[in-house]
Image 1 (cartoon, rainbow, N blue to C red):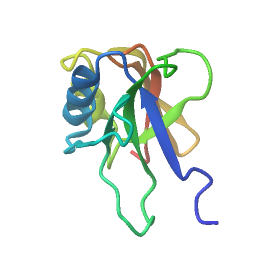
Image 2: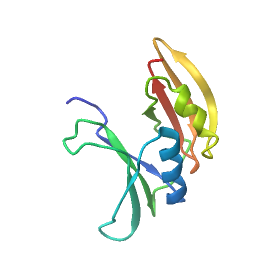
Image 3: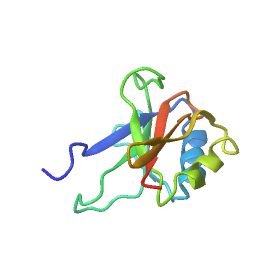
Image 4: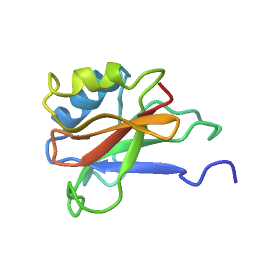
Length: 124
């Protein structure tokens, strides 16, 4: 086992808004995937078919509710999390913990446009 986390899903109330938020903050291209049963909207973060990169998706579906309680996902902040963090508020999110050192790394916490508590992580 290379990674403990294999895939993650972030709940969304407004799918389009959530996709735009993460695309802007992380400067990535989000890919909307068709729903086999037509009962959800699903968007993927960049990933590799071979599973060598941990990734996830944005989900709008009955029973998927955004929360500030429960598990926290640490998203890759790149070389310096200050860069994606600087885009959080302009994209509609709210910073609740600024860039903070943890041992030899850094983290920051934000609330996304849907009400999910998330963190960014980087070595610088």
